[in-house]
Length: 74
Image (tube, rainbow, N blue to C red; front, side, top):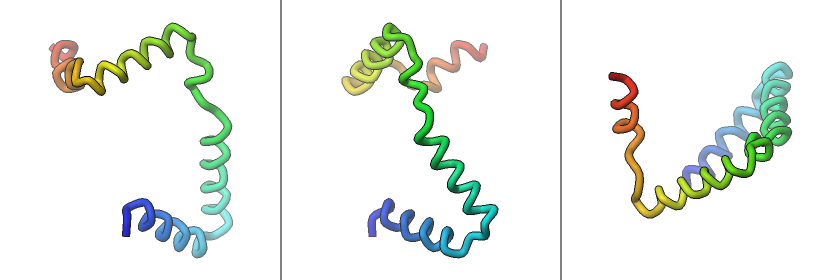
C-alpha cells in the first residue's frame, strides 16, 4: 500500500474515533489551509525570483542550505 493510502486510512480511523473537541481542531486546520495562501500576497518581483530559484535548483545549480548557513553562523 502506498504511503498516501496508508496515511488516509490512519487519518480516517483516527477521525472515526475522535471526540468533538478533536474534530473541531481538525476542521479548523482544514479551514485555515484553504483560507489563506501567502503566495497570493507576495509582490510580483518576489514571485519571479522564487520561480527562477526553483528552475536553478532543478538544474542542480545553487548551494545546499547547510553550506549557506555555515557562512552566516560564523
